[in-house]
Amino acid sequence: MPHWPDRRALDLLRISQPILQAPMAGAQAVELAIAVSRAGGLGALPCAMLTPTQAAEQVSAFRAASSGPLNLNFFCHQPPTPDAARDQAWRERLAPFYRELGLGPDTPIPVSNRAPFDDAFCKVVEALRPEVVSFHFGLPAPDLLARVKASGAVVLSSATTVAEARWLAANGCDAVIAQGVEAGGHRGLFLNDEVCAQPGLMALLPQVVRAVDVPVIAAGAIADGRGMAAALHLGAAAVQVGTAYLFCAEARISAPHRAALMAAEDNTALTNVFTGRPARGILNRAMRELGPISPLAPAFPLAGGALAPLRAAAEAQGSGDFSPLWAGQGVALARATAHGLDASTLTQRLADDAHTWLRAQPAGVQ
Ligand SMILES: Cc1cc2nc3c(=O)[nH]c(=O)nc-3n(C[C@H](O)[C@H](O)[C@H](O)COP(=O)(O)O)c2cc1C
Image (cartoon, rainbow, N blue to C red; front, side, top):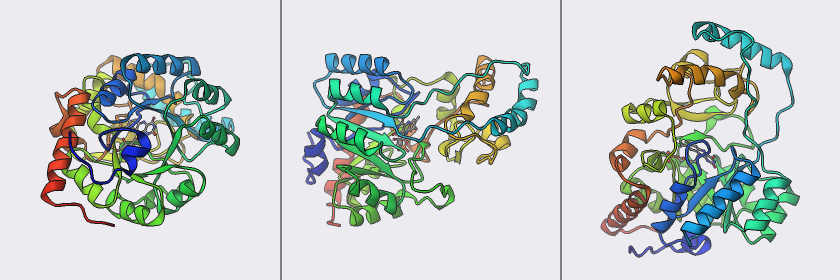
């Protein structure tokens, strides 16, 4: 078992390896969290696309299989204000694709199912007491956050800028995740929507480490032991890894997503066309022809509703043209490290390799 000189995140999160499995809504269930936890990392259950009952069931399954700590993850966006004109403009923009795929104009459009943290989810936290609760898109309202903290949970959230990191630390986060622009999936940005100004991890991480007193967790294209060691050298107390775990058998992703991960090089981009919020995925037809950033996309998470029938029709033909193919910029590196490994072995491999790199070049002090 490697000896880690910086114990801040290990002690705070009660883990033995400074590796957090990124919660990945829509791409994983409890098996991934269990596997990472068994290897000494922090397993996470994303709840953004679950009902409170489903979340509670997954927590029970985790508890039955691992004695390690658990991170329950929630989105805390403002629910969108209905905007029928914008919805209509988006449907008109998508109409040629509907025609191409043989979908009629009266095709039912599902309601997008990403629910923000609310009283019902808070009751799950209070009843099941996960050791860690993490949020994406800022923090929930102060009364809800106070209840989460009173449950005893360590609170984490992602910062995409130094200002967001300062805000999170000042508003109750026990550790801050510095999410570089390289990261796969949704950007956690919440203080502004200037997505073109988002810094990469190499610039963001040391500045966040300097700006806040709480431990900093690095996220974004950390896909092998070298990357993990580099993040620890830059002052991170731990790393959060997403894309690399998508290559493990425990990930639950569509066949087109898996095929795209297997073929990807450095062809990812930020797009809002799948949900209305910027997120990083492998470039595909929907991103190229609708965006990648579209001013027409309805507010998060509503953009996804009208795309869902296109996605289903294309996936039925084996195509990922209209699927969100979430991945970070390190996707090819992640494939080289992780393809063919189970998530426990990947966690152990990252820890061992990072440790070797750190011993070769002992970490400096920020
Ligand atoms: C498929 C996928 C889904 C994600 N879903 C979530 C989520 O539900 N909650 C969250 O806090 N972060 C989510 N993220 C972002 C991760 O927390 C993290 O910032 C990112 O995975 C790190 O970059 P990497 O993917 O390059 O390792 C997701 C990332 C991916 C790749």
